[in-house]
Image 1 (cartoon, rainbow, N blue to C red):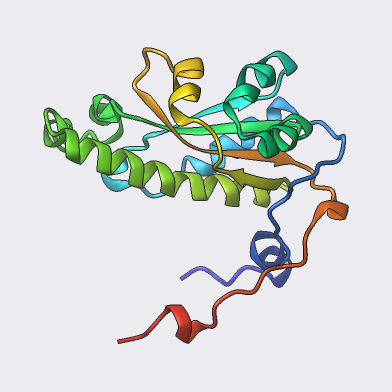
Image 2: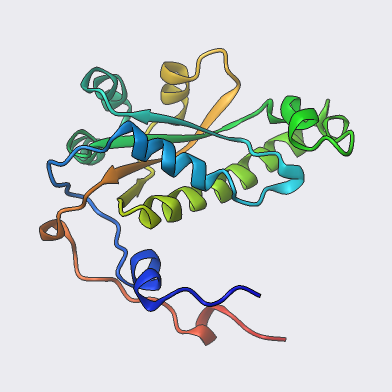
Length: 196
C-alpha cells in the first residue's frame, strides 16, 4: 500500500486549490502542457478506452475563434487565461481499443451500440477531465473549469469531421488571488455520504 501523500501535496491538490477567474500575466510553456497531458492519461477508464481529446487554446487567433461561442462573462476569463483547454470525448474511441485493450476484442462490444458508446465516452471522458484538473494542480497550475458555452458551435469550430464532442472548458495558468471569492461551504460527511 502506498504511503499517504504529504499535507503540502494535499493542500495543493485539495484544501488550498481554488477555481480561478482572474489570471497573472505569466505564460505556460508547451512543455508544461505536455507534462499535464502525460499525467492525466493515467486516469482509469473502462476497458482503458481513454476517450478524452484535448485542444489547448493558447494562441490569440485561436482564442478569438473560441470567444464567440462562450457566454459573455466567460469570454473575459478565457481571454485573460494563458491557456483554455477544450476537453472533449471521441465518439469513435472504440476504434482504438485493439491498441489500448489488446487482450480482448473490446471493439466489438461497442460497434453498432450508440447508447453504450455515448454513455461510455461521456462518463470516461469526464473522469479523465477530473484527472486533468488534478494533473494541472499537481504541476503547479491553477484551474478555472467552465460550462457556459455553445457545445455544438465549439464542436463545429474545432472538431469538424472528427466525431469529438466537447464536454467542458478549463482555463489554466497562474491564478490571481485578488480575484478569488471567499470559499463556499461544503457538505459535512453525513450530508452527502454514508457507510453501510
